[in-house]
Structures are given as structure tokens and as C-alpha cells.
Image 1 (tube, rainbow, N blue to C red):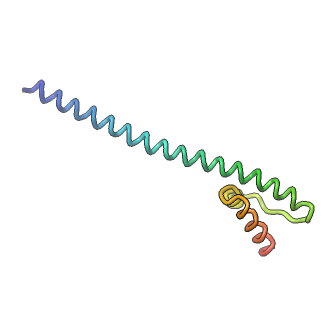
Image 2 (spheres, rainbow, N blue to C red; image 1 turned 90 degrees about the vertical axis):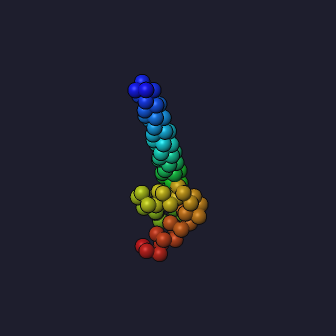
Image 3 (cartoon, rainbow, N blue to C red; image 1 turned 180 degrees about the vertical axis):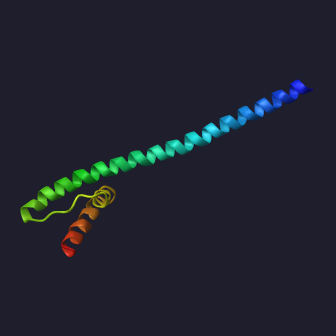
Length: 92
């Protein structure tokens, strides 16, 4: 009887460990996916702001580089760039 009880507890512990590993892997994969998409948005926003400032240089205008403007440009793309240009002129 004691040997059977130990096997049941062993299987329960192994099952809980597998469940815990699954939950942790799910949380880590979602977090990594979110971080990689954030890095992608930062890269796209930086490229768009460089091109925008290059084009606005002919008009003697510019949009500042900071994490907020880079993320707005990266996530919203063209509408975000338009908003950033209007905001930079409105508050300048």
C-alpha cells in the first residue's frame, strides 16, 4: 500500500511540473512575441522618421526623435507621421 501511494504522489508531482512548465512557456512566448513586435515597431518608426526629417529638411522643418515619436510613427505609420508633423508645427 505504501508503494502505490508513493507512485500516485510521484505522478501527481510530475503532472503539476508539466502543467507549470506549459504555463511558463506560454507566458514567456507571448512576452517574447510582444517584445519582438515592439522592436519591429521601433525600427520601422526610426526609418520613417529619418525619411520624414530628410524630406522636411528642404522646408526647414523637423520632427524630434524620442521614444514616443518613434513608437507613434512605427505603430500608426503614415497617419502617425501626419499627426507628428501637425503637432510639431502646432506646438513649435
